[in-house]
Image (cartoon, rainbow, N blue to C red; front, top):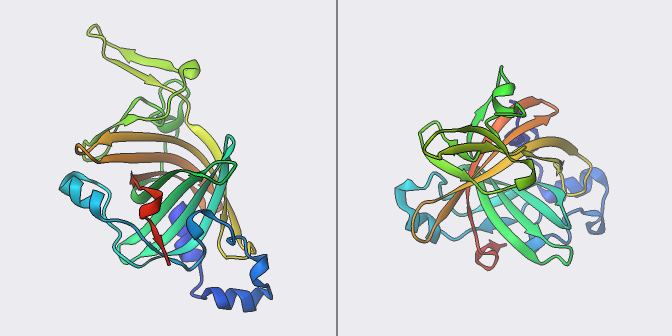
Length: 242
């Protein structure tokens, strides 16, 4: 499987202490010593369940349960900020906690994502064609006909795809490109490079809960695929790190 989630197959069963012994490194050599919220390899992460309860069955994102552990870590710059991705293993399957911090390491955003779907296209133009590729349209419908609306905007790059006499308009902006460095161990000895073309969408699920959908064309060492993740925003102080 050529996808971000295949990292779980690449990660051995060694604990952090085993990594230290294997690579002859000390604690000062770790790449996860000063990350947001104190997150680090092998730590346990607990997220609040309240939004999952408030949204009810309409929420596509499922509660991961307790006892999630960080098994790998990725990052890439976004303007003057740094986007951190903590890949979690849980009894409910893989999740990804995305934390954005500014240049002063002040947390700007936290979102928890889970895999929703993955496609191995024969026709990449359907997804990425400059004029009307699906990644970047102002609406996105899931395979179960749940509609999300584009969150990211770029007025200078907007293209009109189609418009009817009633004023209904479909437009597109190019997906955002970024390169993630993915660390498989806490000393940076094993890394992967993932190339993304992504767009973020959102929808209102209830009066108090919004849900997000991230769709990405991903190219990495095992191949290329279109990955769809769904997620919810979390308040940073509500995340417990052990």
